[in-house]
Amino acid sequence: MDVSNEMPPDLNTTLDNLKKEIFSTLNCCQIGKIKSVDTSAGTVQINLQIKRVAQDGTSTAIPVLTDCPYFVLQGGGAYIDMPIKVDDYCIVLFSDRDIDNWWKSGNQTDPATNRKHHLSDGIAIVGIAPKTGVLKSDGSLVRVLGTSGNDGSSIALAARKDDAIKSTSSEDSTFWAWISNFINVFSSWTPVSEDGGAALKTLMTSFISANPTPSSITGKITGSSSEVKIG
Image (cartoon, rainbow, N blue to C red):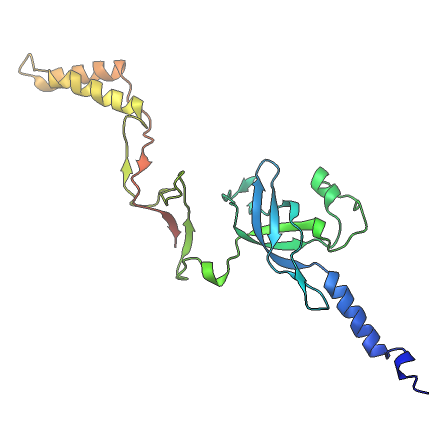
């Protein structure tokens, strides 16, 4: 009698099947794409980009991850605020344990459940890019770029040495009002004595007393810079 089909698999096969089963449900690190952003809550919704493949060869997309905290580079109250947008790519790390209680309280706490490496405990680190979207980098310096404006155009976001600064009445109304008063007063001034210097000093003293010199100028970058280079 042939009993080969009734014999249990050997130990190696059993362990191998067990390993495959464990790894098929283990969540550790995946690539995601931002579906929506809630900056007031510090969370994002994420579509994971790698589908889950079943033993029969079929694949299915993993459900959308909701309420995932996103990582912000920070320390000592200072932080870098990045304008996270829909369709940005991210790395999703799945915590060893349930993070719900910590996320709600910010304190050391017991996990709310026994789940481990669960899809509910993803944390997004935004910034990775596929080969089709490699960022500009020549490897010679630290580079900070940004885009702004409703049209998404690249504009200057921060000043650097030798950047041209433009000041107009819309940015510096106090300064330009002072300049206007100065011009009005001195354009019509005519020395009334041979000692024009003394008369000018008197007029200047009187003018500055009535019109204190502005302490600062705000201005704006003219648009010559679209990035800040350090190094």
